[in-house]
Amino acid sequence: MDATPIDAVDPEIAALIRQEAARQRGCLRLIASENYASAAVLAATGSCLTNKYSEGYPGRRYYGGQAVVDQVERIARDRACALFGADHANVQPYSGSPANLAAYLALLQPGDLMLSMSLPHGGHLTHGWKVTASGTYYRAVQYGVGEETGRIDFDQVAALAREHRPKLIVCGASAYPRIIDFARFAEIAREVGAYLLCDIAHIAGLVAGGVHPSPVPVADVVSTTTHKTLRGPRGGMLLCKKEHAKAIDRAVFPGLQGGPHDHTTAAIAVALAEAATPAFRDYARAVVDNAQALAEGLLGHGFDLVSGGTDNHLLLIDLTNKGVSGKQAAAALEAAGIVCNANSVPFDPRKPFDPSGVRLGTAAVTSRGLGTADMRHLADWIAALVAAPDDEAVRDRVAADVADLTAKHPAPGV
Ligand SMILES: *Cc1c(COP(=O)(O)O)cnc(C)c1O
Image (cartoon, rainbow, N blue to C red):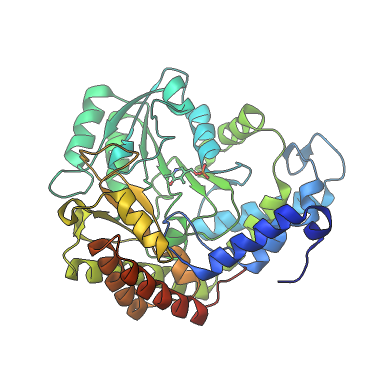
């Protein structure tokens, strides 16, 4: 790669960025929350908008010089509303976690109760888990998946809602391979008089691409990241019904944040333009097709998948029957150039730091053009590595196959 302005100032960091780019080109990235932002998104992120301060909202700012960034933020908001069919969008949250905290700030008082999915069953830390701000300032009662089905247990959700009368029901997950029935959650929320927050951080790109039902018609507030399946910059967004617009905007600024990251806002606008194209719908379809092909391949090798398969971009392998831990498997895969993360499975008897499962996602490999035939090979390689995690010959053979495949499919943006 050519020398960049960073080389002249800081050769150490410049060299590390080059190393990371080479890593991202040279391995198969199966971390379900990761993707490859386009060159256009990266360019907007690295633009001069990083130099601007613009506390407030378009037309209502605290500093001067806003003529350009007001237009950028209006375009980003309008594109978000159009793409997702929302009444109102706030594109300022710094990421998914602050987006959720802002939603709580808008809808709840400290000490109020939320009903949310538990982390070990696939939920997210920011859904009321004790070690986070969400679990410190609010109380949480949590639902999970059925032990046999691996799917959200709506009888439990409804029973907990009736018993505890939460002010807010939260749905959305980080490690749940199935379609989330937002309409069912909305029914339960309506019955008990709770607000409904749907966190689509992982699946926003699938919703935008039409391969997962949208929560927007039924949710009070929808939160998301912009960098997972949506394939934009690191960032967050909130979409909401008109009646919550003022509270949501006030919660983001001045409630939680200072100045918005205008360079990110521009990059979100670019990503939303990309996500509105027919090519992105094809991409979203291919992400799910690939996840299902990978699931079929793994099932053929006797792997135990939580819920038996997948409807979205991710799958969760329970490795108990293979006699290796999640960490061991993830390390064996990474040594051969296949990068994923160890993950708890529901009802996991092992500790979260070395759990029983691994989570695999197809968003990033699909962005570099891999298809279902490649997923069959990938399943074979994963099976070989898990069967012999310490076998160097297997590792070297798979590493060579991974190198061939990545060389054939250039990684976008890097
Ligand atoms: C990733 C994720 C978040 C948090 O996003 P960050 O950008 O990492 O703060 C929130 N909710 C869910 C469901 C997620 O998967």
